[in-house]
Length: 183
Image 1 (cartoon, rainbow, N blue to C red):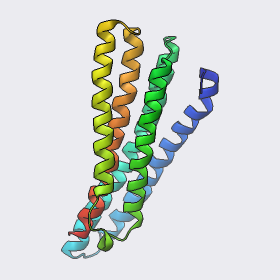
Image 2 (tube, rainbow, N blue to C red):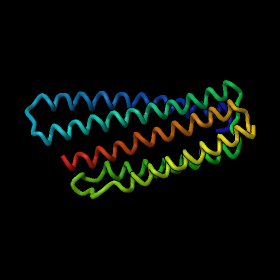
Image 3 (cartoon, rainbow, N blue to C red):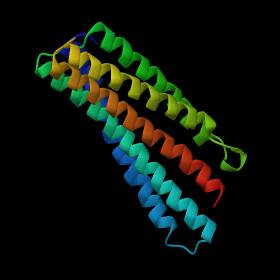
């Protein structure tokens, strides 16, 4: 979206989906709480703990989406426009996030007994971290050269860091999936 008006429906969706993740987290937690009232094996107890971690991480992903919308809205409220280069690089970060989400999805769908490793998720996370590091270095150089207003760069890096943090939540889910297999 190139204007605040065009972005508003997307921001509304981010808020709606964050509320949905909150609701799902509560519903699944209630189910898990009910399940734990019964006698469980040690293995089942470990799996339930991993499921709690997964739903917490999923909810954090929803929070991150809403945060991204808030950062963009603040940038517009301060009349800051991202440069075409910033937009292109944020688009590349979104592409890396798509790969991470795909890996998480595969790992969640695959029965834990069939998962040999989570290198798909680990590689996706490493790519996100490396790209964030590269963008941070470029940003510091651009600040020194005054290539763009400092405040614009601050909003830009807030977005980059938010995406990277979302990547952390995504890898945590795959780690939980494989952790349940080793219970």
